[in-house]
Length: 107
Image (cartoon, rainbow, N blue to C red; front, side, top):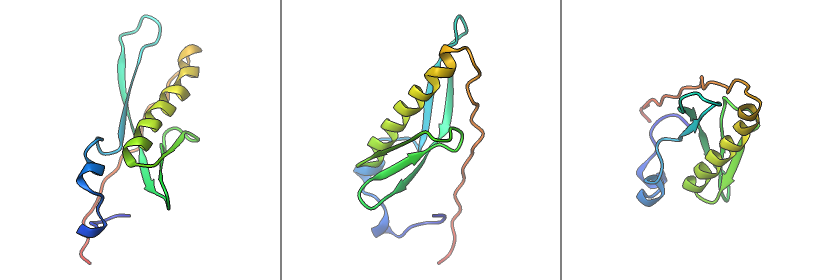
């Protein structure tokens, strides 16, 4: 949903604080290369009883959790697991291309 939500629809401060805008940073090293960090944009959606997370740049990599924080933590683990295969085979790791922005609209 684009735009600004009303105060009563926003998650509590304790729910918001633990993560950085839905971006997961992954570190990796291929053989004798210098370790590198990559950030993938994570979309987190509120479901009826939990939160679901996915990454446009890595189709099929998803995670769910009872809180946004846990969904994001599980998503980081899912991405790291997903990238183990290409790393082990010395294949290219998909570069992130997805970006996000938000806009404010008058209601």
